[in-house]
Length: 345
Length: 268
Image (cartoon, rainbow over all chains, first blue to last red; front, side):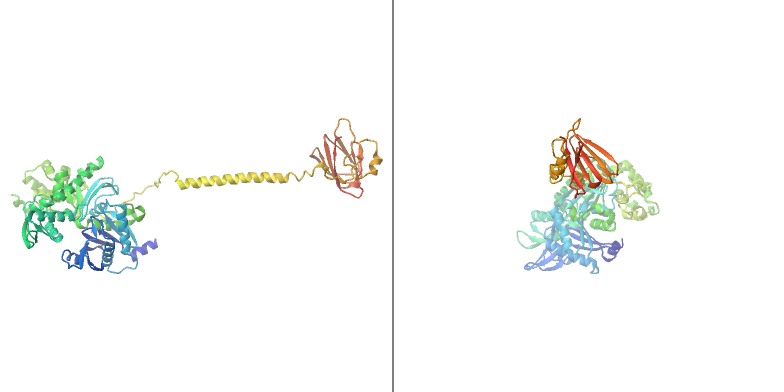
């Protein structure tokens, strides 16, 4: 008991949402302390890391030849192990502001559909990054806890977490995931769809950052009351010269239709596999959206139309997962059952 | 017309339930129509209008319903939410609360494989110990039994036994030849061997008839003891001078120098 108390005092435990797009860190007793893009800029020749996070993101697509700005995670899983570990180590140090005696216990959210090897990689990377002990939690579970859904009750709740790399759909009851579907479609896929659309419709080449800006500014999934437009700057494919075009929100919606349809399909498929008693609960209560992708305008309306159920957003969709990991940290003794340890892999 | 009912109307003083209902009625919608519009159950919508928040399934859903319903009716959801912050704030109760149970719930698991193996091993060890115990006990018996059973009859040839003569009429002969044959032979009626001991003083005796011990003890002066055996009789004498031994009526002569002797006599 005393030992436990001591550990609680001396080491600060962390909850991490290691996302494809953004990494968030929750420090026990403090709240969310860090929210940065999961981007690393490094030198191409010797692999030396130059910048991490916000700073590195500003470099994406704007680096000279010898510097590459990469995202070490793709589709929700680690694509570049060493870079991920280095990035995580940087974020953990930054989040804790270098003032701990003991190394922290870290809970990391991972997509539900990943393989054992991919999970192992996250645990290893977290331990390399300076964690005393690393636990994993499935993102939809973390998002549901973060959203405040009654996960421990014998009532079905559906949560849809649209992240950067993946979309997680899960039905949760009695502290566990009943049915889940994870598709590797998320914000990145939407950005990619916009890039493809610009290339096809305007012969205009745009970068990832620009397409993300378009998505945030005018992207929508359902017709809006007032349509908007934005100026898009890129390089003309024919002339090779920079050019500006005006893109309307209906055009953007058309471009985003494909990834959005995949998300809707994933929700429908999960509902089809849900046991009837839980499906009844979900019809009664509705679907909760979390994750940055749920900020896409009208996606709640579209899902509601398509499924015939009420659909609502959590208060802060971007931080639902990390809030969930934080909540688990605070109640770690009773919440161990929802965690994945290295033994349970 | 919707604009008239916009957030900054006198409605601000009303509760959110009334504002929602006024907005809905101003639009000429029934709860059933509102349900199809928002996809939210009419019961939950009426719970919002009646401000019975306990009937709503939880804070997350309550907030979501209020937001969706307010938007559908053209009201500002944030404005409404501010009116009752307490009703829509999430609870801070622990997620997993363990109910206090009188009787602890324990799983009724079948014995695990390791436990079963341990059980079998224990049983086997016990069995081995039992077998060893039985063997050891028998061995002890085997060692214990030979003790009262001295060597076979013909192992003391140099003893000066009684008259070896087959004929009953030669006592002096026997005296002449003391280191002769071990057993005196004279038939008695009914067959077998008859041993007679006449004591003139205290003497310790051990008598076995047909291999069975029949006497072990001291005889005193004047005692006359007779033992019969079908096949053979063994006698051990503690004080040769104090007794005279007769076999089938024939006296047995012993070397006077030997105070203690043992002899086996067989039936003729």
